[in-house]
Length: 263
Length: 296
Image (spheres, each protein chain N blue to C red):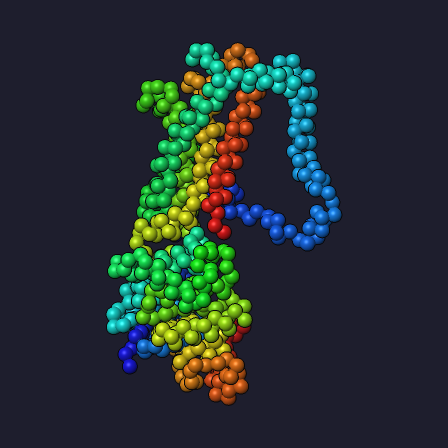
């Protein structure tokens, strides 16, 4: 299988006032096309740093980061990013927020009608056709996050990067959006990298769970294959022994082997 | 972004007057207040809203009347009111260059403020954007701005007279130079405070510098800019009276000086009220404008 995202021997060092801080050390990871992987670990372990490196929002001189065979030198439209706090522009409607991205990626090749169609389609995909012309402050947190996902998907990225996208949502909304994301990822055959701190979310969504050790100098501690059949149903899985076994393995890693002393 | 450090002196002002200050929403009122308003008649509500200001004005007029009783040269409220009625009966008469109606005086002052402030906005706002966006430019200009900003506006008048060789442009120059700083500084602070999230969106979407400006920077900075404009207008209106006293011509400031020479103290008091009311109206108009650009 073709490796869509390749991370080889990556180190990330931040220059702080107290001297260099090693956030990531010797990270190696390959993500194949259509794969859904989650990064999980205690807070401060550098999972968001790793995602930002792939997004191109951070750069490192140490190691190789490739996306679709090309070196990652900065952010690019082939990598769609969904931020934790949705990051919608409050002065634009939902439609315009998505259109901004569509226009940037396809504006050179397609006419306005086509661009608008793309925007409508992206919002329809996340079920927000009715709220297209509302401003972000007029819709709920879950809807905002869906617009953020629509904005990322509308760019037709090769890789979808999500940084704790559901972290700020209530449990019911989160479950609902997890189901939707699962459906969308399957329908669009997206390659997804997602940062999370939610064990159930990781097991439910992922093909592989990448577990990071505690920082500083965090690295990949273990990669867990989630061989549950798709489509997955959260209710059926609730009584599935294999699901609980996988869940137990992640918990074992997080709370037994990587427990932080009173973090 | 270090811009915020270099231009700190103004920050407190920004925070104090930023239009985003959360206004108490009527919908958020606790249920208790609702029941109270339902049980009491509506008239009482209005009375409670207008009673304190009326009481304040009454106290003010009372004090004024007492002071004017003890000092024979100071006209009391009644005398001033009678004079004002007379004055405003014909605000737009013209009897030569030194004797024109109060309306002309106000309009002339407003025109000077408009021109001086307008030019300051045309230069100050783009400059503020550039200073906020480029650290090099900020480091380059911040010592000069820090040096020139505290200078008293009227200290610039001789330079204006020297360069323009006429009173009117010199007055406009003083308005320009004294009202440009709040706009530069507030705009620059606004740019440096654009949330990193929005700039990350710009980076991830790979937006062009023009799109970043029109879709992110400009809307995000607008509230700060409006604060700068409001402070500037305030300063300009404050300064015009003093500048016109020195430069002469038709205008509310010169009128005050003229009436002092005529020893018409009623008119001086009227002028003080007029300056206050016009300043209040300007401030209020800009507040309304700023509200339109509040996205939160």
